[in-house]
Amino acid sequence: MDEHGKIVADAKTQALVRQIRAVCLDPADSVVTLCGEARPGDLITYRRPDKTAAECSMTALQAVPMYHKIAVRDIAAGEPVYKYGERIGLALIDIKAGQHVHEHNLASPEIPFTENLPVTDGAAERWPEGVSFAGGPEEDCTDNLLSAGGPSAGGRTDKCRAGESLIPMDSGDDHIYAYNSDLNDEAHGLRTGVDTFMGYRRPDGRVGIRNYVAIMAGTLCAAPAAEQIYDRMSREFSIPGQQPMDETRLIYLYNPNGCAQTPDDTGRTLDILSGLIANGNIYGALIVGLGCEGLQEEDYRRAVLEKAKKPLFYMKIQDEGLEKTVQHGCEIIRGLMAEAAGARRTPCPVSDLIIGLECGGSDPTSGFAANPVLGIVSDQVVDQGGSAVLSETPEAIGAEHILRRRGATPEIGQQIFDAVRANEWMFRELGLDVRSGNPSPGNKASGITTLEEKSMGCIHKSGSRPFEAVYGYGQQITHKGLAFMDTTAYDVASTVAKIAGGCQTVLFTTGMGTPVGCAAAPVIKITGNPRTAAVMADMIDFSAADVTEGLQSVPELGEALYALLLRVCSGARVKAEENGACSISINQMHSMC
Image (cartoon, rainbow, N blue to C red; front, side):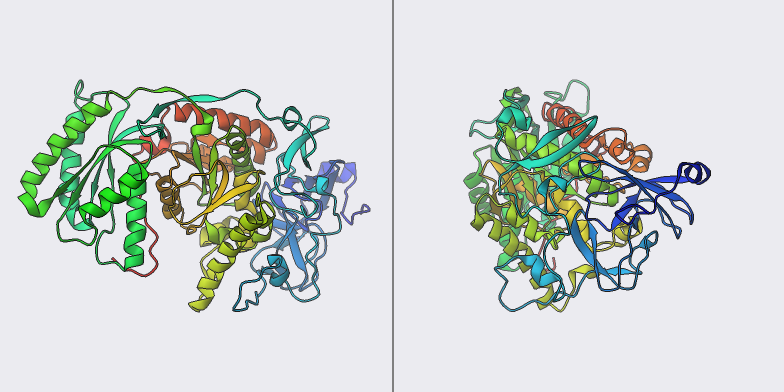
């Protein structure tokens, strides 16, 4: 046993037993994540994620599935369990070093809420009396590292000021990151030039990365006509020589609502649907209404034109019947497609980009591989003057104190904090526990135990830059830099909200795999799970599995993903587009429709 209490096997013993590599994310962590399935007696090896990068090992006492957690030191019942340098729950029973750590011995703490949301640090209210908020025995910010070589959004960053960047430190062949705000841009590794992509600059100044003409039903009741127009025109433009331009495509925006909603939900539906049509990826649109529904023509016209100036046509089935509506709609689409074909790609700076940061079907590799890689891309887009949007408010529960410290101002940080706490309080007021469904059964089977653990991995998508703004669900993104959007955790509805807010593309990490896409914008799928990358290659655009397998660093793969992003923005199609994935969901608060 070494000075840190780790069981260290000699060379002869190591040669006789099976070795399983594990990932340790912070020196204070009491668990590591296995990169292989362990059996009792297997030697678990991992690198200490600090400047020493010391090799550590211990013996598994139990069978532990791949990507699940194993204790690296004894943990007494009632003590916090640490991962990412942060508490992810409390030990339900005594846990010995080498034992499996999961639902049977780890749970989220009971969280005492008061009627008034707290204005002090949120973590203090989450933990039993007598458990301090300090992140562990080591308080040096430079020890808060990811063993894979990338920045950690969590950990003990109390000494670090908002807006400080992560800079590379020389540590042999390893990429180690630490906080420092005193170096120039060159030392920060920031690009000094302007990166560009080939996009569509619209007359109103918006920029698109696709050239779509959209058809949408104004209400679900009008879908038969809208769908027939889309089907007829899709067949017509699939005939060789009939498509005006290869990149001018016809899309269908599914509208699940439009009537029989409360005023609040009607407004939310209108915000999202008008935002999708206003997105820079869409040249123009045809809305097919019924005539008697709640959302009328003037509502759509006002909402769309307040956001963007573009061709917008509206028809009512009750004015001329189904077949004439379809025939008339086909004429409108032919004209729109011909006009849209005149648009041309031109060089656009990355500062024109608004990217969405999303995850779904997460597993532990999402937290330590795919999400940190995406965090590098987020930082690069922000450093180029563009915008990146983090959302999924329930999946920041347990990490809200970290996000608050990253506010560009105390007020912005507090807005994020309050949004997260209000989301949890909303469930409490309804007599519900958000943790009853989150993490999902799939998340738990993969090795994620608590919502706090899931949240700590989730926020790595946002990189390390300060948050410059906070937006409501589907609200138009107007600030440059990193932003937070208050959305549901449901990945389809969250993805749609960001696109409605102006994101031209969404980068979507998934550990277990998902084919989700959206008709209005390309959704780039990223995984850190080697099996998912191989088995679901027809759904995955980018593999960060080399981080999981210890073959490449987070910064290296971040550069590769950034290059893919620019190719996609210049016209390269993603798997979701090729598969015809076009899911649309709008989060409802009070309506069933």
